[in-house]
Length: 189
Image (cartoon, rainbow, N blue to C red; front, side, top):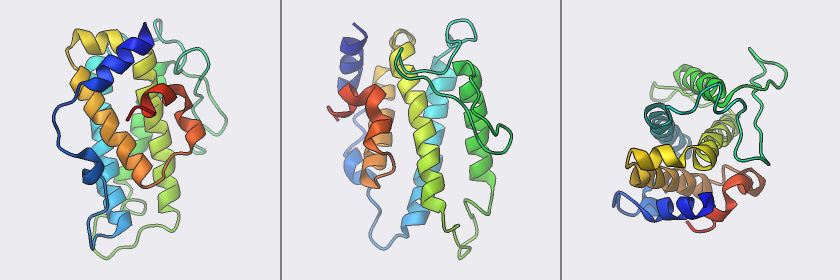
């Protein structure tokens, strides 16, 4: 049933134009600048979807961050949480969003001044951010589709997820194994 719902949601879009083209690095644009712009945009999208439509994601309803019974996500950031930590989904997403926001606000990671260089490991940082944001989508698809449908937000979820995945695929930011929890949906993109 959940698989059928996910496929129905995937069919809905906001008519956002050709998202596959929209995620490509524009001619003459620096790839790091482009990743920077896109990461901010995609972070804001998933943050908005989760924050405004997943009220039912509580300590009780989602005591662990997962994507169905086969995939559980532990939090580790090597700063505040040096060892993997089991968190409720709500707490995991809260800590994740704070962590991403810290990355985006750090001028040494995401420089805002023209000419200031990106760190050499910038793509690696982006990959980590995208991997963690993907987990939020995986959790939403596995645990909160009913809420998304109750809000009538299927097209929003589908369009944002497509945008996210097209970008990730275009720049090869996630290995196939990370997509496993949503492989049946991803393959239909």
